[in-house]
Amino acid sequence: MTERGIHVVREHLAKLPPSSSLTIEQRRAQYDRAERVFPTPADVAIEAVKAPQRPAEWLRPPRVRSDTVVLYLHGGGYVIGSPRSHRHLAAAIARAASAQALSLDYRLAPEHPFPAALDDAVAAYQWLLGQGVTPGRVVLAGDSAGGGLTVAALIALRERGLPRPAAGVCISPWVDLACSGASYATKAATDPIVTRDGVAELAHAYLGAGDPKTPLASPLYADLRQLPPLLVQVGSEEVLLDDARGLAGRARAAGVDVTVEEWPAMIHVWHWFLPMLDEAERAIAVIGDFVRARVG
Image 1 (cartoon, rainbow, N blue to C red):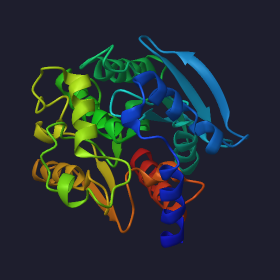
Image 2 (image 1 turned 120 degrees about the vertical axis):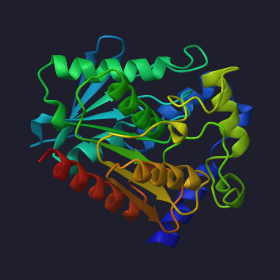
Image 3 (image 1 turned 30 degrees about the vertical axis):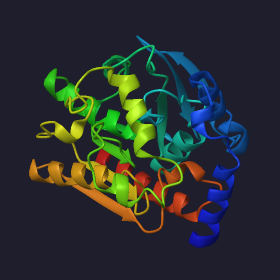
């Protein structure tokens, strides 16, 4: 399935207009139209809620535990993406984890630069605790920028003395806004989604003139001690491969219980192409097992 599935994904991506030709508003609208291609299963209950700072969506597949929550932080380089664009993915993770998912509509750059997204993620976690959810039954998860935001939020929770959640899940995480890894060059020809120039532009939108190695924006450079267990999944053919490897190595050196998986032949956030790739289903099943083990 891998070769045929990846070919189908690449064909799908090739039909999209180049992002450089679109305005930010057009890119956001294009991303949200993913729900037409990847619809959320009809048995998933969707409930809009107003968290303290930002709207969010509850996603509840049938027969999931009401006391367990995956706080999901979507990808999109801190500039595009929304609960709509990632609804099918967050719902699939919730189903695999036998948990509810709360998918957060955090503020986006450049209208709302760093640390707006981080503040929204922390506020959403505090809101969950205020609703009576036990910290040890919450897992933070996200893809790409949302994977980096997951780690940044875990660090911020530690720094603010807030109760530690059960774990963090990082899918193809973007944790180095300085874009310093060798894979930005060595995987450029095999990654159909991410480019160095593209993510550098997104980093500038998020940080402005700020230091791209700011720890809470680029957690690759942060103190990772005392973080909860982490699962890091990354594709072997993506530009952010070294981001994931670097995060896993630094977390392990800091004494964090970290599991890193490099999936052969996979591209950036292949999970998002769930209907097209068997590997997406398998990777999400691994996430489900990880979440259930950490909250059990």
